[in-house]
Length: 293
Image 1 (cartoon, rainbow, N blue to C red):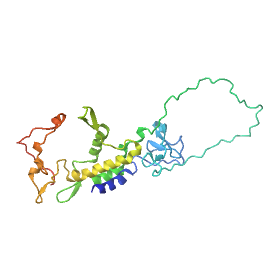
Image 2: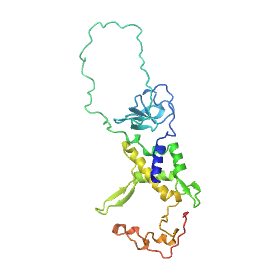
Image 3: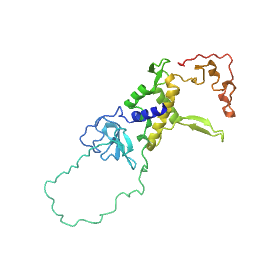
Image 4: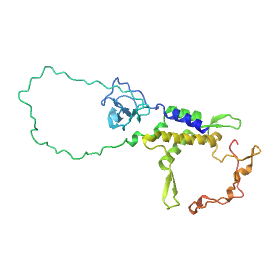
């Protein structure tokens, strides 16, 4: 099941056209007209090795260059490997203004030396340090989650639950918006914990392939996570522990106290720092099953 979902999610979820990207209608493209008309924020220049970030009033705010081996992908609106990118931008022909009449030979040989020292001493170092890698804003994993095709496929293939009789219905507990919000928390903030070895605070984070070249790793990681969630949680529309220890084809009510030979009430945290995660046994506690099993 998990492998099947992996094969489905990666190609259909991420290789799609952004909902806010519209076709640019210029017959040819140059730096003066690349930002004119409706379209995405990032747009390629002829050759597709350079791209611009459009600002207000149809002006070019910033110009970027893709790293070696990559070009701008018009489908993803970001740099991607040149072997898989789609980019077709027609350059505008150069226009030369003809002179009204032939120019005559100069009356004296042109000077080969400057007439004087420059009025401003050139700086020895650039005023702004050049970037050595793609800007971080050019790679936004969560931008991929806004694609209409991705959202439609996720809602029709992933976030589905089943009744005991096998009837399919949209999950009430698990939603696409809930996943995106949780994913942002886990990927950008993470969960902190104290390392028992040295007492330092560390964070668990969901890896999304933060570097642009590792985009496929982030996609595969999310697909694997969703495949596991579909089997263990989404399909049953519950976040409770699922019954898996059956006896004679039935699940015992005592499973809530421990499955597969375990006794939950007798388990405790052996690390002192984790003792706060344990709680005393409540012999009067009552629970009600809410899943379809």
